[in-house]
Image (cartoon, rainbow over all chains, first blue to last red; front, side, top):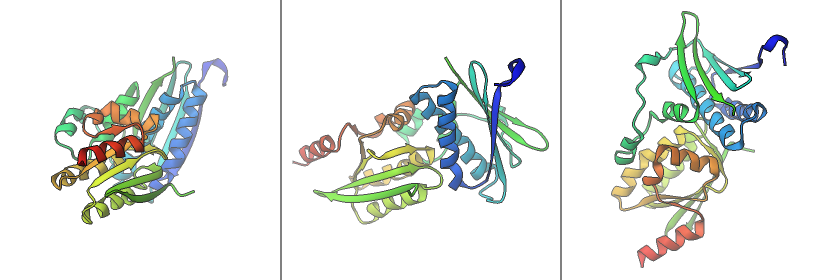
Length: 143
Length: 118
């Protein structure tokens, strides 16, 4: 741990390709365990990270495999904070409307479930846009 | 080990699909193709045995969601069994256990299906 309360962090940059999803989600699950989360919560974090990185690859980059996705895991005293950065199309948080899962039960259809899972499995999910890059920041509280 | 392998067995007219590994955005086409092929060939009672499915993301859920109505229109169904805890958690979180019949074991699912068809 760094001195003066700075949280320990590590970063991983991957090419914008779905073949690396398994690597990233495995890492997120292990990091969750290191942060002190139980197995069930660690699985939820790994799923949220999968969804967030998939969104970047498929929607921010529209499948362009020549870009990058940067993932940072930050071990705060009471939180695991995950930053996911990219320089593709950003997502404006105030324009997001989460679907009602009940609608899927009555009218099954594809799509829209990723953000819903992220919001259900993490304690906080935020999106930020800046001129040079966009960010998804997710927080899981460690009890 | 491959990210995903899929075995399909026929048990008394029921297509038992056994995915092993991970269904995510990288492997979903393989998963979706296996289900679509069954539907195309008229094998529309599909039991997804998830004993060795370590993980399914929204991409995999979407593949199932996209097929459930066409399959039910052909008087078939997609059922699930042997869900690992994290996979069950996804279905329960989204309320999808109301949409799909979920069984604790393959035997229980097959027994129920056999009873229904008698």
